Length: 153
Image (tube, rainbow, N blue to C red; front, side, top):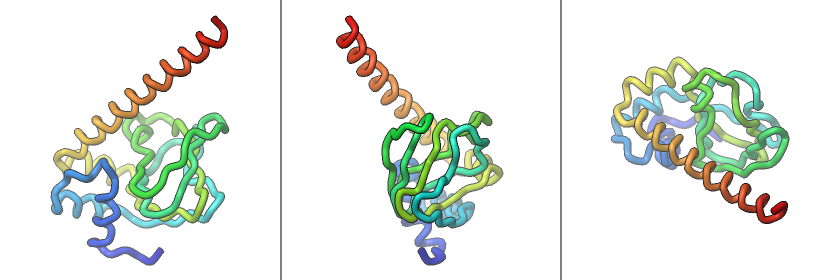
């Protein structure tokens, strides 16, 4: 992927649900704090258990999410990851591997902290995203529990 200008970065950033309601000015601040990185196919982007140093937005490509070496799901354009580790200072909870060449917009830890303070609504959107993740996880846990109860009485 070619080097993106500010406007092109904004276009990719807007694809993420996290940033859809931000103003052009706010999107510009986010774009200003990003840099591009390309990970070739079949390479790790982040490893479970490592300390998070960046927040990532997928601009293009498909990545695989694994927890404890087991496939969880594929993610693609607009998906983001790394925010939980940056927020709580704990290790990454999943491994993310590139299925195809993956083009990323990255924000380092310092810039991420700055965005939380400078971009109104960013922190709230992150919180809502995390709440949504928790709710989906609770539903999955309940379905698994029901399946196990049905199987083992």
